[in-house]
Length: 182
Image 1 (spheres, one colour):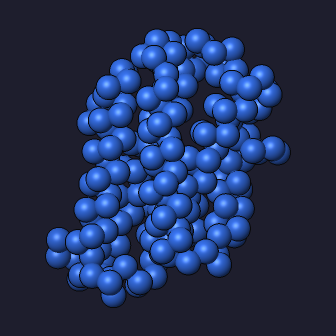
Image 2 (image 1 turned 135 degrees about the horizontal axis):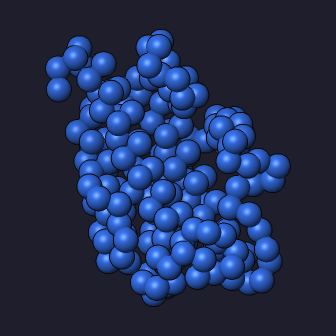
């Protein structure tokens, strides 16, 4: 899937990837959805998320929190309240630590609540995207607070690209629990 460069393509990619992710989950049995993830034992799994996320809820919460980053960043900056995309004190070198904080924050969040939170935040992000013109979304530095990037690039990352990341984990989990047959 090519990276979206128009509003139409962004909305379509976000919805398509979200639907594919939901379909993967729907094709899992209730029991399979509850089996803890056991990744991180493969030397190729260098990224921290392979050890961090222990279940579907953790994935949902991760996606939800990144939606919140995007929503809050755009809304606050539009109000004239300058704010970086990432939470203080994190930066693009330390955002992995921020992800761990999100994970810790939601260890008592029930699966059903995490599902509802993700579904709502996905809709909220789509509504945000729909409120912008193609130029506002994809012209680099259209908004001074977006730096050298377009806000559309942040939207792609928080939606379609992140859903693709989640699907890789879900597919790997499904393959693992079904004994390698998929």
